Length: 244
Image (cartoon, rainbow, N blue to C red; front, side):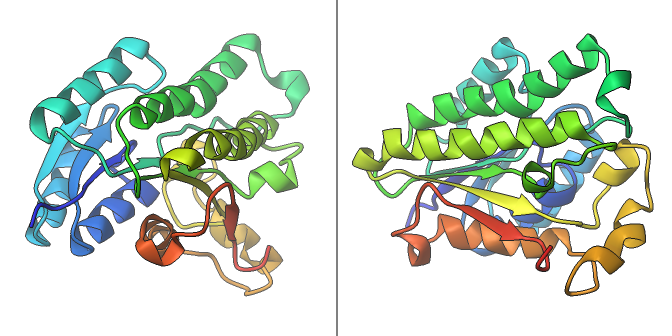
């Protein structure tokens, strides 16, 4: 039987990488997008292929419309179909209060995290049929607000939550489901990219479960939402936060 096809943006590390390996185990072939780390993307490709998937890597910055077009051109040429999008690509910037954040940082944050995600979802919506799904990766920051830390990142993820509900209403008549997952304090390198490599462990005491989460725990939620077991779930946002 033909394996379903999953497109994962930002798939070379962290949550995206965990989703790729788990999707391979669950029977998907994968178009793996990455922005700059070709070496890590190849390593994830190797892991996914070892679990039975056909994997094609494609470089692209989701904030650039020409790159989004090219990503989907590769998808069409290599697979000719799409069954799920894991809309994962995103950025964070060093901790700062709003009064210290300049216009350029805000534009970049929203270009990647919001506009890029919406454009990736737009192209997916043109291709997905009944039974297809889009899983947007949000963040618990959308609820918490992340004042004095990452208020711009939090605001961008709040936009993703709203977008998830709106797009789900648009696509539900086609039988396409749209959900979001809000990770909490997860052990990935996004904290280092934000200038605080030890942040997750430092804040673990604030989590009711008194521990950080793993990228695999997020991937488990994503792949469940993509599955037929979640066939009556759309427009929802699932917190995977240890209770935080």
